Length: 186
Image 1 (cartoon, helix red, strand yellow):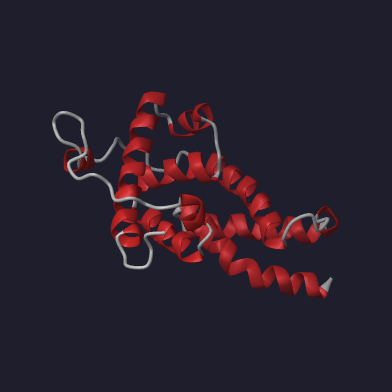
Image 2: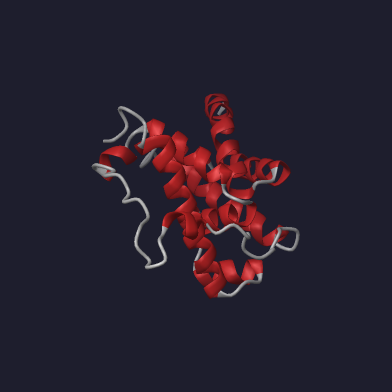
């Protein structure tokens, strides 16, 4: 049992970073990670070795993050979309790209690179609070539209607009910080 506890403690920083990225609240993230590790210690037999320990813990953590969001949704900011319009910077009046995006190469190969995930994580952290939260809830926690809208008190249309803006910002950030860098054009 002692060896399992040591492995769990070694993974704690990674779990905490993942949780903080999702929740953007250190205390809530710490609670979610603590609950995850406690669940793993209480039922170690549930880990049957069909995946890596980290993957199993992330699966548990995703559920704990959703629970944390549900518990604290009233405290989360639900302000409207930000005033900046990134669309104006990226698209001409006729709807076409102002500058054609660079060829990103083979996305499957890029996704497999650890450095890419570091840059993606940094870009996601730079998203404005509401956009970042919505993007994480939808794309990383895989929550359904209805669940997100209910939790944050927004309409599906508003959700999709904010997700669209978040994706545009991530695209721009990745273009600058990954695909535009020498040696990263895949």
